[in-house]
Image (cartoon, rainbow, N blue to C red; front, side):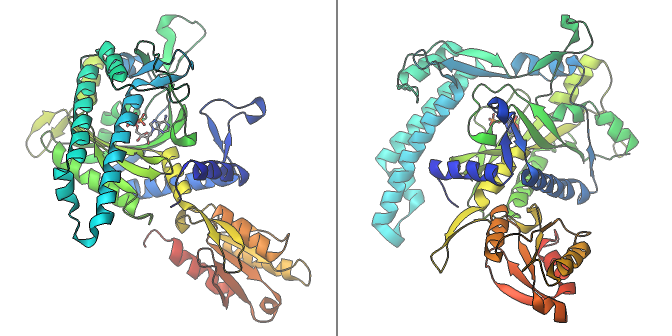
Length: 508
Ligand code: ATP
């Protein structure tokens, strides 16, 4: 995979040039951290959703899907803790007037120390060659140990300050670490303040306080408030899950890095309801299941890693992220959280309605515990898209940009290309296309030289190009060209479906 800021810029440019992602309201100079998916982007996004839905809902008998509304009763957000605690600590640099998340400034500082450690390890690995014992080196090298101690001390102090809501100490830590504004280079900071990330609006015609409602900042609460509806009507037995894909909104303080952090985005979440006491075992299970899901996409194992949370959210008794190596480094892609009975318990208290499960085996009633898996659809899109982006120099010295997308996720599975329009080739190509379009998204192109058409399909990640030439008129054979290898083969036109299906089937 290509890495670095320059590559990231190229990826963003490619996403626009080929109809994947546009800045929202671009003709009005855009809206910050809001994006639109174009013709190819929406297709790729839908395919990611479909893959998640099939593997989570269709493949699990005990998981069902719902689609709850974005607007919810305002008390939902009081009960969930979002009104009081869905805050980020923000800090401004007085010279550059730039705003930052205090936690991100500190985490970036820690990441630099991590980088120093990794460089030290790499240097030693090069020096010692095959005899190098990395574990031993990490545990005994004085410079590595000193930096490791620094990291532990910073995180301990930071977590303690946040837990005690001691924002003065968060600022003191930033000053002691001599963290400078990346833009102005100055260390002239304002105090740290809490900022609630929920967007609010009014429902109905009066703008009184009581009419204030929120745009949901996560899809999970729509699942919790429907727990009993689904359990009863679906006659679900614990353990069971409820899945949902939908929009979420957060007024992010700093929205950078393209679709990595947006103010309007989509989540794919699954809440798994379990017997109290069994949550740790299900937490481990879903951590592994979700990691396997990512690995199943064929991007390699080394681009993913777990990161256990240092500071647990108010609702969790265990939490980990699955991080992905984006062009700008390892960052959170998905969260797996053991949420205890916090949410159902809180909704039970605030609504006055029992949200319990009657266990027919033990004749007991209890509020179930919840293990959730929560992934950002747009972040997953960015992970797949940036990993797929490749620049290649071919044997003849020419360059091509190719999206090596997992074939089952590609916007188009097949492009049908008549070598030329005349001599009845276009008509024949239409016949092939009409046959295939019931099974796959097919692109049809007859303009430009065939080589240029191949390049365009490479650039949007189409796994197969089918070319219709004069021989097709004689014996109904076509050439099928594979995107990654660029190898071409002649097969009967009726064979195309089987070949493509084999490659894109979920069964693989
Ligand atoms: P972060 O620490 O990056 O702000 P988070 O820990 O607040 O994320 P969660 O509340 O656990 O995120 O949300 C679950 C998932 O939703 C995240 O792993 C991420 O993929 C996605 N997500 C969260 N916020 C955004 C956002 N602003 N834009 C795009 N995706 C997001």
